[in-house]
Length: 281
Image (tube, rainbow, N blue to C red):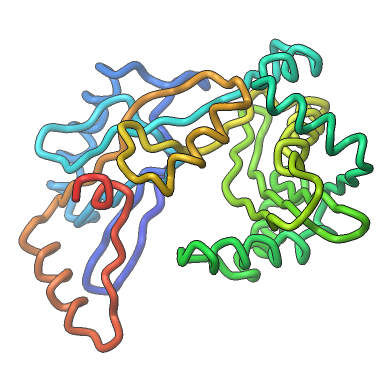
């Protein structure tokens, strides 16, 4: 199971990045629960991890340990391996098919590659600013390309008469592609631009041997109307809904509480809520 370990000098949290697996197959819920309980016991004895933070949203887990804070979470996954391009398209919602055809007829231009990164970031930054949400830096995306390479990171943008109107970033291996970031301008006649871009990205990745296209996260039992549009957008591509959990726990609760208290005293420090806390408010 891949994990991220963070050294904060006086506090040592870690983050699960993906579900535990055997021979490229995720463990079932019973096996995962046993794995997590043994992991927590190991960290409790070793003292090398003080907290298990919320997993990355693409790290949906099939079980959660007793006493952990958790929430229901899911994602929509399109099967690229066992479908041809036509079959993938035919599973899209009819309105998506119409929107994609409309954008194609109106000469939408799709570009895929690192040379679109600046245009993607302009779209992404504007989208995050409008939503009032945290945004990653341009340097972060550039470092993805530098460290992982163009055969593991893919940026795509759709243009309307040379103007960028929608962009996405995916991180991928042959196992799966993960759509981690996106941005869109609304003032274009290409109302199907984002849908067309995702379809073209699926076709591109399929040709490169990628087996799945993961839209990375939907909040099940969502009560936030602002997120409902995102849920519907991902659902419309006809993927299979994978359901599971995100969870977190403090290995050393007293040390974790002391660290949180000290962090709140730091000038200018604002506590940010993770997905688990947002859903459980």
